[in-house]
Amino acid sequence: MNWSKYFGDRKFYRSMLTVAIPIMVQNAITNFVALLDNIMVGQVGTVQMSSVSIVNQLIFVYNLCLFGGTSGAGIFTAQFVGKGDQQGIRYTMRFKLWIGALISVLALLIFGFGGSFLIGLYLKGQAEAGDAVRALQYGRSYLSVMMVGLIPFCLTNVYASTLRENGETMLPMKAGIIAVLINLCLNYILIFGHFGAPELGVTGAAIATVVSRFAECLIVVSWTHRHREKNRYIVGLYQSARIPAKLTRDMIAKGTPLLLNETLWSGAMAMLLQCYSIRGLSVIAAMNINSTLSNIFNIVFIAMGNTVSILVGQLLGAGKTEEAKTAASRMTVFSVLCSLATGLVMAAFHDVFPQFYNTTPEVRTLAGELILVTALLMFLPAFTNATYFTLRSGGKTLLTFFFDCFYVWVVNIPIAYCLCHFTDLPVVLVYLVVQASELLKCIIGFVLVKKGIWLNTIVDN
Image (tube, rainbow, N blue to C red; front, side, top):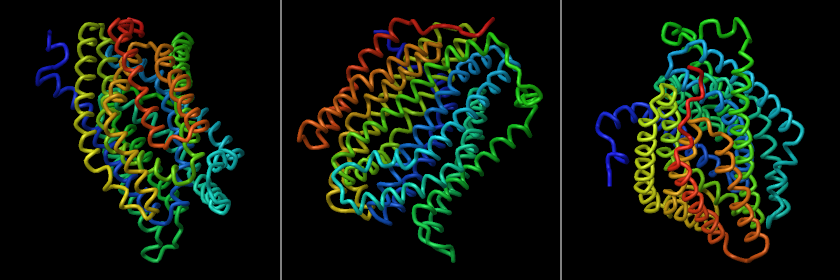
């Protein structure tokens, strides 16, 4: 076997980690502070924690819609960077701004007029009527504040993604670190009412998040415009709204499947939680604890997905298809091996982390069991994530739609729905079956990447 196809030399890993580590660090700090935030809200009570978890699932749908809407243009950005085409980068960034604005306005309208209905969908399970009413009230209060942070989050996403696609990963990381530290400090002050501040509970957590998003946006946007000699594409960005018609059509053609994929995939995640929620608020609380810790341990393979998209996209833009193929294989192997290691560490602490929450013994036990399942199967999403970004880097966005989103709706959700509604199986066993179904997706992904149908240059030479 030719091991060099799957394992690179020191130079390869140095170039890879130069891109990946800043993303990992930013995600690690962001998720660690989110973990502390989650624990702080968890100290207030199980109902409050469940309501925040529900709203964050709805916000997660917006976040991924935004990511999907701008990712199509991001594929072109990475390949324009490989060509050294500054005007092309400028066009793609304008496209991101338009799409981001449209998605944000739609989200504000949906949350503004339908927020209570959406939150209520998760409160139809085995819960006391009083708890459901309280959860709805807390959720509405939290959502109304979080909506204020959608616009700065959108701008940060557009600017930071473009910076990363140009190889500038340190500035978004630093801005993210500052933002999460602001969030952490304000959480401590506003949730519990320290230093003379009012005790605002879940509303205080939302205010802290929104303030940190404005701070991050200010740092990223102002730095980009101040360093025009380094970010030449920013010169003249707002002097015109023009984007060539052909490029616009190409970005829409490549981006629409990604937008639909991220929208429907995030909707699928919300649907999965809704399936589990019929077993009661305790299940929502336990799922929240599990996902919070999982996000900490998932940072390696999440960052590697972004790294695959950037580096492989640049190689394809430069016409280096064989190098792109080898790089994708090496980064996929690296991601899976790292996830095996981090999964074992996570499994070792599966019953320790839930003890930090001020909740019932039932929730702590359930959360620990869910964490153990997630940890032992972490290598499966690591592989499918790397595969997804490999296919996407070559512009095969329609294929990634069927590979990613279509699979969740056709396989994962029917399994979860049927087992939750028509059987008495313990929710942990249901969760295990749903997570293990990713194995078939791994096989499909391996075949698609092996065929090499994603090895395309999509920008004009």
